[in-house]
Length: 398
Ligand code: DI6
Ligand code: FE
Image (cartoon, rainbow, N blue to C red; front, top):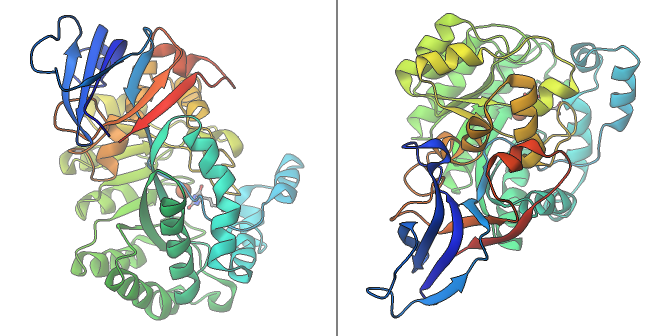
């Protein structure tokens, strides 16, 4: 890309120094894929002669969006289960009766890596069309060593098929597969830990995740998974306090987790532990909405403790069939009472932090990578406020 100077734009840099990091008459200069200037526009006669100037027509420019929690790779769908839930069955009842995650596991095991990538592509494209530049993708529907690795490889394949950064999380500790029913510890020893070792060796894993819940794994079991991750030098994160409070967030914080995710049932101790460890709280309003959850995540306590808050789609076939980061922001504001600024920070600055990319992306500042979203909007709050409307003009991802 030739050195470029973007002028005549409204810059929502998402830096923390002022609301939205907003500069109404802004400019951004890009060289070698990096931002070399972001700030007030105006007279650029000096220093930028070699730059090609682009007039952005007054459009709004934000960091490209970052979806830091998705289960984008899976086969089939669970529309039938959606009908059952509308008929009164709960998510946990369906899971205990062999539906839920385990039914997506059967479908996922049956298909090839290429087929998994093919089925995920329309979901990824929907996200890219809304300005996503980075997406985290978890395994967790294979639950054998080979099928978990197949999912991770399919995730990396998506990163080659589209101009998007993919970060992978190894989530073999997502559910106990039917063949290990009642033997969760054996499943950890025989599948989760050995699969992690191979995946790490092949460079397929950016972080290790797990599901801490009554229908999944206990804190003691999660500890064994996290000990192995730590030994392999892999960062951890956790699905914690989604349906009940097992102390998962506190455990995650103890391991220095990058994030603890869901958190509807998070208590004061968990909040304090996360604040102390610098663990990001990833809120997933799509799952809250789909499961018609009543318990709100403790947003005010997280704020008061200074815990960074991210927002993500949790795109998955069961609890959050949501491929729209824009709608996730809207839901975070309307359902969780995040301010529009917090919602947008949740899909930019704080999402970057949740993925360990805080130095590289998530704000528009000199030194960071040039990954921008350009919107036909005047003010950033518009992105959060509209429902079912995509104002994206283009992505600029160097
Ligand atoms: N919590 C969730 O909401 C997803 N996974 C998890 O641990 C649900 C995954 C699914 O229902 O397929
Ligand atoms: Fe999830």
